Amino acid sequence: MNRLVTAGLLGAIAIALGAFGAHGFKERLALIPEAAGWWQTATFYLLTHAVAIGAIAGRSAWPTRLWAVGSVIFAGTLYGMALGAPRWFGAITPIGGSFLIAGWVVLAWTSRQES
Image (tube, rainbow, N blue to C red; front, side, top):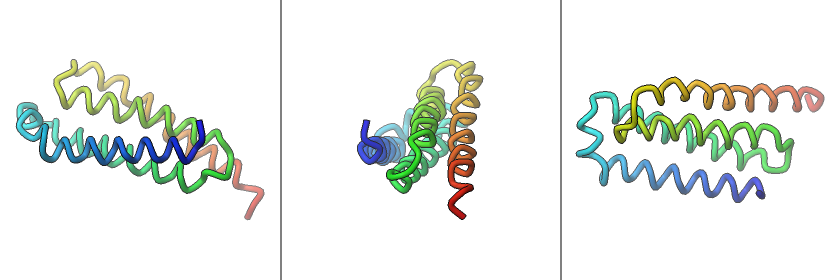
């Protein structure tokens, strides 16, 4: 998939889910003490990586791939727990985080020759 398409879709999803969390799901998120924080963190990381994908659209594809997969896993598990999924979803979240970190490391590695 085109990287700008990926960035645009992830960004749109982040904004929509952020709005749902602030308005549409506000009462539901109040049922679990940590839910609002999980929702906010998921939205922040999803949007941050959507912007990062767009920013490097003309460069190596590997950071984009890692960030896209990591964003879906990381944010998806947090959104799931915020909506009542079992707490063991939290054990999956660091896998997504590892993909996000790997994307940044790969970006640094592939950019080292350019400085």
